[in-house]
Image 1: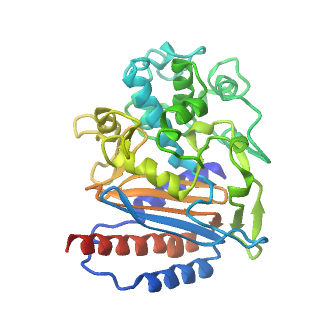
Image 2: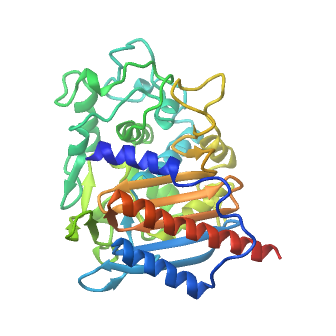
Length: 398
């Protein structure tokens, strides 16, 4: 199931946006008409709740929620409703990694075994080093082996298995989950395959380098400076009253999904609200600061977002006209968007900006939909938001 979601998420990201959609001089709707349109599509899709924000020139200019965070109690889903971000969490892991590099505790191009208490060696290429740059661009040669990766979910609370324990069991030849198939038969850097476990490993390396759990390090260097009071890595750190329920609407019966945690939490475990995430995204779209509070130096932000692949140095399976990569930062040239998205049970999230970084849209939903409904409604709503965003930008310009 989890492997399918990863493939689906990548395909949707590549196919959902096309150049030329959105940049128009006026909106076809008033604000009231937009509300009616989004609410209509929400209901038609079977989405229980959603919220969104529009950011123009690094300021939130529109933010609203629709539907319910708890359908039974009729609790509204608002921009302050908390939900797990799924793979958008990787951008937080990336920021933590870049902060540790700023502090000279890590290097993008050092062998990761320099920092680990166990060895990570690709059995197909045992003499080739794996680097943080490889982990951050999904070119490490590490793969998410099914069904082991699917078992990283724990329904009912935070996962009881410590991050380091799971990773050692996956990478140590004596480990419970070790297999040669945990790696690809490709030299590190030569082939791109999206890997959550590689992202989790990067988060663990940060922990080893800074001598602090990732959730505490994030709190110190990201959440507190940006006043992200509704953001944390673990369920135990979140007020349950603020956390949305999660739903599955892929059959005739709407199902409630229990809250869950992941053993590989640096790949998708951050919980936040649209309002909080907007502050983080604005910092990354600028020089690394938000309202005078800095989380990264400008040069670190530029490194994180810089195209890592070039015609002379790229994975063999990457078409640069369709895809490039930063450090845990996605760039899709055909899509004309940068940032990240996420897909998990009961969760669909997007946090993307155009290439100018002048316009950005964040969209959360708390319901897993059929593929058809996801394409037609979720991404239809997202395109509506982009249309409205460009109209607001044009209105500001006049």
